[in-house]
Figure (tube, rainbow, N blue to C red):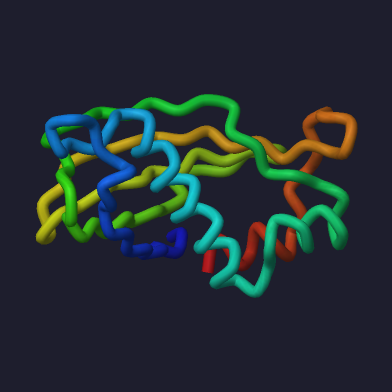
Length: 132
């Protein structure tokens, strides 16, 4: 079973539209921050992964289901969990919650690529840390 990662973000005025509702594209920024923090919690940075393993983890695709709007000054919790692995990629489920209620669900397909952008095997050390 994969590890669950949690990240909290506060919605600022700059994240919202004229109606005080989070602009839809900003959810992608929140999800990216949560994925980066998950990597940091394992003792890595995106730069150190590139330096140590010669790979980058990039988004191949994402699917977001907006259930309820997030609003100005909301405190949101983002739960990130890996659903499955292949040799070069993994699927991550990310849910955004407000007061323990899911307001957005997403599925992100991440791929490990080398410096030339070609798919590359996910290092075993990194995979183990993501799983445990």
